[in-house]
Length: 335
Image 1 (tube, rainbow, N blue to C red):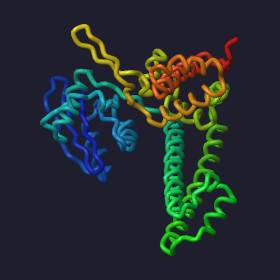
Image 2 (tube, one colour; image 1 turned 90 degrees about the horizontal axis):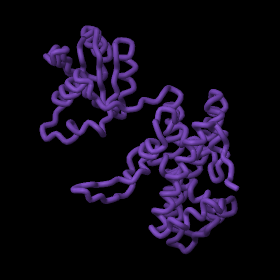
Image 3 (cartoon, rainbow, N blue to C red; image 1 turned 30 degrees about the vertical axis):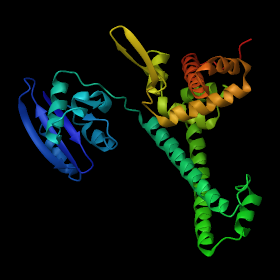
Image 4 (tube, rainbow, N blue to C red; image 1 turned 120 degrees about the vertical axis):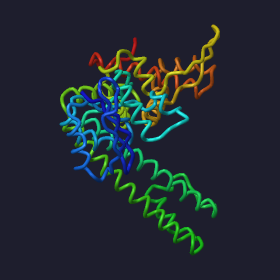
């Protein structure tokens, strides 16, 4: 059995294979464009186990090696501190460290979503990107019109857009304004298209996913956008042992430092999906406004400050979501 460490980059991969006695079998650098050469290289190492870090572009290599490998391991780059904090760092050394850790079975694994969750995540993240781009363009339009004291709250309604076209501005600003408005309309068209695609995606989902959508949508303040983000980023809650693990996965768990018996609470770790934290905080604000029970919890926590209080509510909301998804029960307001 050979144990192969792979250091993957955008244009090249570095491969190092060790045997059970941790002796070098092969070390090779290959171009990512040479797919047949990569296949021949790994075919000559069979039987083998391989490890690759969960970088942004690992998926094509995983699909290439999955039929050849006896076992494939996806390594968590954030937990491989021996590589990240090394002072002597090179592709060759990184592949060697990965191979040695694989021989010793010490690779910290990363979660690899299934095909449907990967597709769902891509659609949801593209919608998030378009939303941010649309907001940036809107802000630029407002900034331009504010130079002429012409900004107004209803600027992006039908009447407001007609008003923007009639505002007297300089020739250069008129040209820029028309470009920005065309870009904003284009983003809105793309957002409508991706929303329709996500609705079709939800309708084609398995029964378990449809139940999960109904459970999450029963919580006050939780709409289709929040449901899509939670399901695409968290996936199956059964892979977590407890709600605390889900909170840590979302980056909403507070950090801590302890030394000589003294313990200090830090802010939230912010590890994990930024989009997941954002929708949970937004849902927490809506929930606080429409539920007396959650509002009273928020008010009790306000002694720490409004921002910390709403993050604590978002963390509690996530634990409620996990509990409901585990049981399949819909949300019910307490008596």
